[in-house]
Amino acid sequence: MVSTQREREGKYDVGLHFMLPDLGGLVPTGGRIETGAVTLSSVYYDTAERDLLRQHLTLRCRTGDRDAGWQLKVPADKARTELFLPPGDGETVPDELAVLVRGIGLGKPLHQVAALSTVRRTERLLDGDGQLLVEVADDLVHATVGGDVAVVGEWREVEVELGEESGAAKVLTRVGKRLAKAGARPSPHESKLVRALAATDHPSAAADTSGTAERALTEYLDAQVQAIVAGDMWLRRGLDPIHSTRVGIRRFRSTLRVFNKLFGAEARTKLDAELSWYAGVLGEVRDRQVQRKRFAEKVAALPSELVMGPVAARIEGDLLAEQHRHLEHAMAVLDSDRYRALIATLAQWRTGPQFSAPADSRFVRKATRKAGRKANKRLTTAVAGTDDAALHRARKAAKRARYAAELARPVLGKKKAKKKAAKYKKIQTVLGEHQDSVVAAETLRTLGARAGTTPGENGFAFGLLYGLERQAAQQARADVARLTS
Image 1 (cartoon, one colour):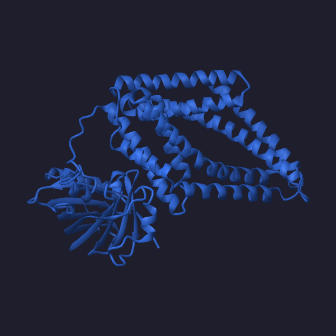
Image 2 (tube, helix red, strand yellow):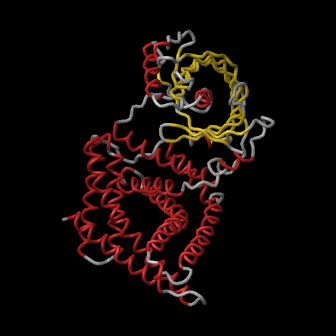
Image 3 (cartoon, rainbow, N blue to C red):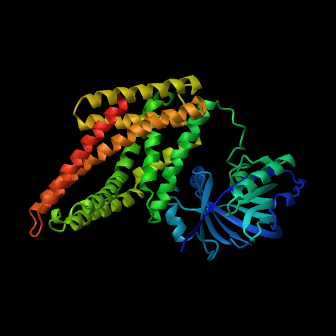
């Protein structure tokens, strides 16, 4: 069975003759430092084209310490999630992990790409209760990378991994400062594998020479691809990443639209269409999840004498069956050629968006202001009318204005960007309630008609719930009108 843990660490490049500074002064009263030494052997696996690495995933089998076995590392916000399995024969990637990376690996076979031997000396900083605050690992690494000609490399680095105890983050920061004072430099390599492959088909990391605006765009898009990539694997594990995956897709599509002049029209339009398709596949599942929870609460709130027949059972049974059907379809989509083509395209964009025009701060400010004006205009028009679809379009415009402000934070400044994003998030939330009510009402109309023709059931409670949803939609319309006045 796959087990998981979260990992947060800092990596530092040091010279072969680097002297690790004394860390004794960082241990709290009653704490201590435990030292140790171990030799680790790690074999890394990927596709021939390095498809996993392009999405910042690493898959390896390690021997030599308490973490011996198969490890799949998946980046997350400011940390990584590590998935573990026992070593087995140490040569064949376990099916449990192979299945998880099948989409990101584009269905290609996995094989050994590098072997690393690491002489590790550790200092574990413990608090007064013996709980780990941070572990400092001083690593001397010997790497062999396969290919037409084997390439051998050697270097030294220091890793500082955060423990689970409260206060550990402060110690992590203080250790980092002490290492920097001793001459250590933050590593430009996200992993040992990246550094090992830098001598072959991966160029050495260079200093970031892009401007603030271009860097903001690139990092924002990269974060959304990471949400989609993680969602792929968590869905294959039987977890529920659908909401976070769809948010990542929405933010990516919003960027393509708000900053459309920066990207080639053909590539942008095609990617937007494919992301819309995949979001729609996941949306069918998400809609049922949201409605099941919503209706369960609404039915429970009704006076019992008004709930005639098996109303809750009808709603839950029908929607759960639909959810399972759509989830089955979504799982099949994950192994489709169309989906793999989308993942391959996202990997290319992640390496670095191909800007067709200068991505400077002036343009980012201008595009962000334009997104806000468009949202305001759509909202004013929608509130003045009675069309539900117009309010839905206004909601989507408000989302784009919010996401643009989030992206532009390094350009606009923290305070201004936060204020803009908060404004449109509030509008988006109210309009979201309106849209949820509109969709819920239509679902209830369908379910009520079905119940009304089934022996032992009737549509009374469904009609009552329908009326309440329409009332909620009208209230949301009034609420958003007040926001614009």
